[in-house]
Amino acid sequence: MKTKTAVILIFLCMTSALPAQINFSAGAGGMFRIDIETRTATNAGSGIVEKESSLAKNFGGFFGFFDAVYAEVDVSLCFFNRSSGELVESITALQFSILGKFPFDMGGFTVFPLAGIQLYLPLAWREKNINTDASSDLYKINGYSRFDMSQLWIRIGAGADLDITDRIYIRPSFLWGFRFSDKSERDYKESRTGSARVNYFIRGFEFRLAGGFRF
Image (cartoon, rainbow, N blue to C red; front, side, top):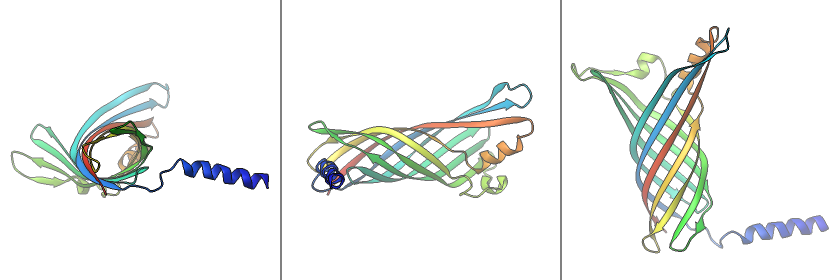
């Protein structure tokens, strides 16, 4: 009986901390993302660790989100372009994020921590020669599909809702995270198993600015 009473009291305390109703909102805005990839190799004989490469990719794009106070779901369309001599590499990708959040009302604005997962799915990966205007599909050349190059990210960050009116607000937010290796990176690790142990550390930042509307 005492156990049941304790459980009921804990449940009442938890539910009393929640609002009487969940308010929904939605919005859209722009995003800027930086991915930093570092590849190291540990020599199988000597154990010496060497940095083999370090690469940064800058993405820009747009996103829309749906918010339910303690959770945010969003979809982004982002773009990457990089020139190397006469060749231009371009990527178009979708991002799907599910983020948990806990808002703190500061009076006139709200701040909240963010944590969740993000799925990155490239739609197109091409290389173009600016002199000949010839374009190549890098998926076909490298023998990978779009799903092979998909990436799962773990994200943490923070954001704020700056009230313009009772219904309209501006939402800046910042995310940091790291991701797991995609298939091409896992294949490269396996190809180097005999001579060295290869590791990837891919992390990145994402900056967002959006306008939202409460229903």
